Image 1 (cartoon, rainbow, N blue to C red):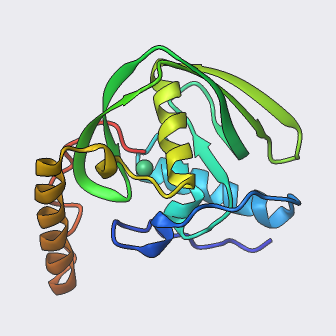
Image 2: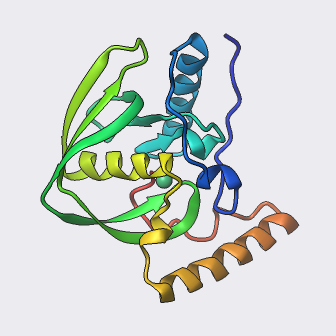
Image 3: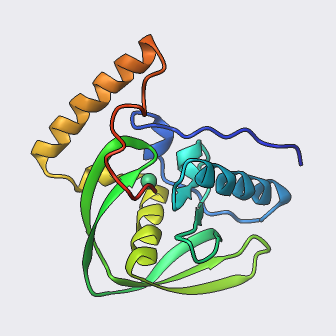
Amino acid sequence: MEEIALRIRVYGDISLRKKARPVRKITKYHRAILSQMARLMYAESGVGLAAPQVGFDEAMIVADIGSGLYKLINPVIVSKQGAQAIEEGCLSVPGVCVKVKRAKNVVIQAQDEDGRPVSINAEDLLACVMQHEIDHLRGKLIIDYASLFKKISVRKKLVAMKQASKNEKMHQSSEKSCELQL
Ligand code: NI
């Protein structure tokens, strides 16, 4: 399949709030999208990316925290344990950092790009990334976890950034406040 040009959708884009559909039949089209998602994730120095972030409404994610690339189709969390809170950034909510309380250990069931069932025991950072990406498949963003006060200030900031990027290409230059981009 030809190269598919993907672009990261930013807060305010409707595709970020849509619930992803399960992939019923995996085709070369899905494999091509997953490859492009991985490429884009690395190019943006992210450690995870979900299909809605590039405008697709099917349940697919990629992740790599430095220990190997995961390309997962129809991922679901089947068990959760413990708690942790990590400062998370999101490629779709630029310049924002939110400390999100999540499970410390999760078991994920999914399919790989060939349709084989996979089970992943994720802990710590990988567990955080998986939960963040699976949130994206439900239309949920880190800003939803923020306090009301933070939500208001974030909204103001994003409106200002949008305004600025309309005038000239200066978005993203503002604050890359969070180490972790997913
Ligand atoms: Ni994200």
